[in-house]
Amino acid sequence: MLIRPPATDATTGMVEILDGRTWTRVCDYQELTPGRGVAALSAGGAQVAVFRDRSGALYAVDNRDPFSGAYVLSRGIVGSRDGVPTVASPMYKHVFDLRDGRCLDEETAPDGRPAVLRVWAVRVAATEGAP
Image (cartoon, rainbow, N blue to C red; front, side, top):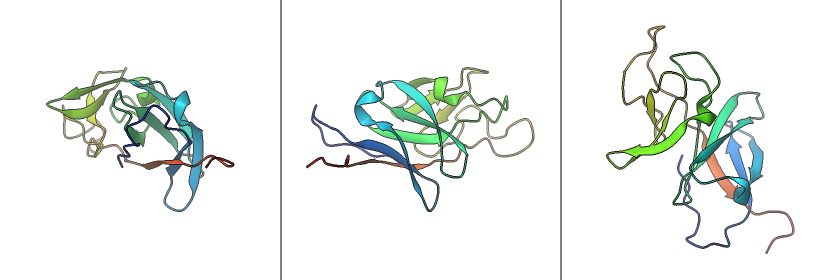
């Protein structure tokens, strides 16, 4: 799920991911480097890759690369393809749409499953004590 914070340099708050029932704190929005990802654990223990793009939008997808099985997508290269926000896996360079998790290069992973990452809801929540 895509979240676009207000267009201001003063955006603050805690980035959180939703595992279906529980919001889990990841880090402060200002700590996310635009164009880079971070790995986080959901309340249920799943590894999630969280990204802030250069426009300030947030994305969260599974951290596990379905082609290699490695938990590395948070270290992938953030970019775009035909205007679609993407991350390229650092393992075999497969490119995934950050909006819906689809692999833009191949439809199926080596195990025969669809090459689609789970997309996580992500938000910026007010920090305690903030106005």
